[in-house]
Image (cartoon, rainbow, N blue to C red; front, side, top):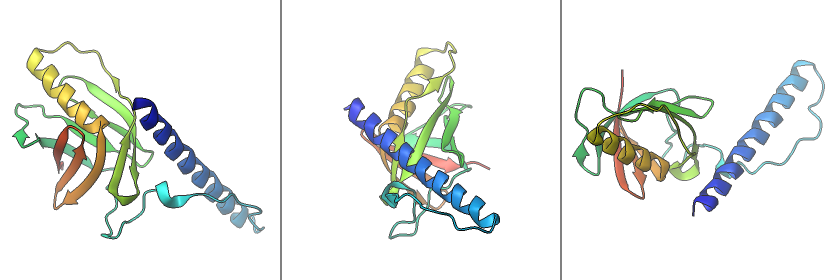
Length: 165
């Protein structure tokens, strides 16, 4: 199952790279006043686009975890999530800081790569929170936004995050 997810993730990454290179070469040719030349046909179905509901993933926004499967996150330091315009996701997981690559897909899908984590030692409760949060992100399937709340639906349930200031 992980091999299938990795293959799908790599296909999305390759498609996004081809579109970026194609657009960049067309822009540079246009600024030099000559035709762009032959361009590659790219399957744009996997590139983030507004769906039928017109929702676009909010890149560059910071989010603080509110609840997982209806159970609220407590404590002074709740997990966080931020996805920048280079598709790098970073944040605090409950014990350690993490970074990964994440791609919002068509039809409000979300693909998240394996995590790179710091190596802090924490108590068992903080480690359990961290593991549950990271598992919800890693197995994410769909996302939605309702007001100031980002909802990530995964195989392990529903993760709710609130926009941070």
